[in-house]
Image (cartoon, rainbow, N blue to C red; front, top):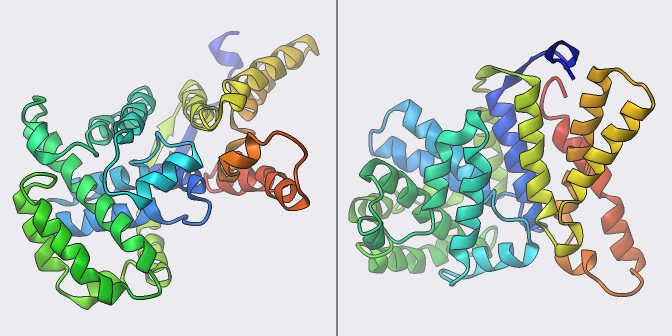
Length: 319
């Protein structure tokens, strides 16, 4: 296929793009769809308090939104938000780095994602540049604070905050950079800091951030690379779905070519095949891997996934 047969380049809003990927990732949480947003908000607000420039604040917000892009399994997600530390946590960091480094518009986030579950006292021994180490550790701190606070949202968060603050203070210098831990202890003294993390207040912050538009030109091959990123996240959900989206995309394109459709249409069909199952991330692993007949409730959960996919994609103008 020649380049002129491809669909034209698109002007994609970078904020919409990042939020769409974040929306997709958060589906894995099933019952908690705001973890990435809270991590992004916490990281950005602490960066602001440190006096870091607006560019760095936005970088941290995006890294917080996408920090769990290597997570496809609901089982893994449950452990990440329920346990302070566990041996398999590094796997999703490596996977996240791998996914983002191949997509040029977001490749700058890959090193931050790679180390966002690495203890502060181990980063130097690994030879991680200080600039990356500090950013990654701030994401790690925000991530663990939200994991500790999660059971208490809309219930007893103001009571639980003392235990969370004590935990961060205890882990200063080992898990977290002393400078970052000290800052957190300062800003979290205020009750408003904690209340802003609850869903009804967090939504306002998200709305304000989504208004910060940054359109970027993106070629159709880059769009296909983005679609491939999405497909890899979805297909990694279960051994039963491995390479399913890629297989659908290849077969659909082959059939379109055999039917004599235009090169542009074939290219669009291939991308649609890569993206067709995004909503399946919200289906619990236990349902996808169940042996035997599904209950009516389980089947209803699966039937939601095509509509969820549509809702995700309609968030990007031009798609």
